[in-house]
Length: 342
Image (cartoon, rainbow, N blue to C red):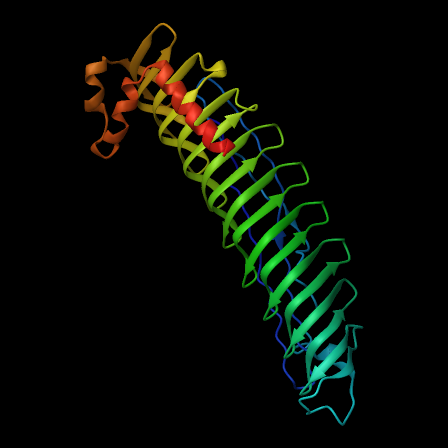
């Protein structure tokens, strides 16, 4: 049985707090797991294990790691300059604040807090954009010394709204963020050429999405927790072979139809953990064969009039498929092709 490495896709939240006690509190925690390693093995058991692992990187664009200035006694503020006439005024004025470790903020202040446009940088990180009451808020640009970065909208020190995130290896995410996490519609491009377009939730591929592998495979369908979960179609080599059916944790699981090369043979039936399991039917140009499978192996022959008793009540809606001819099953395939073109 082929094994796959469960995909991990995690991102730590940005946490940057500030107050007006002459301590500009900048605490950014950056950790991002990102990479793509997609393997597919198609043997006689048609086990579609999908291997998607995300390699950890030291820096996460958009999750800026600056010093925790407030709680670090060794890094006290070296100086803070604001025109005395404006320190407690509602009017904006230009000012500078610098810490002993070299971290510096230059920009506008209001009521003794950073407010308006400015920039904040240390030895590794640079942010330029808008602030509101000592927090990054509005449009801004972040870059890390490694070349990774984020351009987009922020709220309360978190990525929030539309943005573009890029990594030092060339990977890019373009889409929507909410409270520092990917949420809604977005597209992710890996450095190896793999692409995902679709829905995200809590930094994970979740909902409907299309994944283009870098070896000409495509998956269209439902996702949950970065894995194929629910109904979808998996296509090999531009349509040479195809599976239409249900998935669980990246494996064919439940009812599904497998179209062999050139569609001269089709398997209809049930799957468990990527292998045929339960009632199934092979059909080609000249004959049909029914049987019971277990762990990808046929263990019993059955007649067409025995099919129903091997299907659980909750799956009775799939019974008509076992009576379709080869041509009728090809038409189902063509319907999916037409929907994809639209």
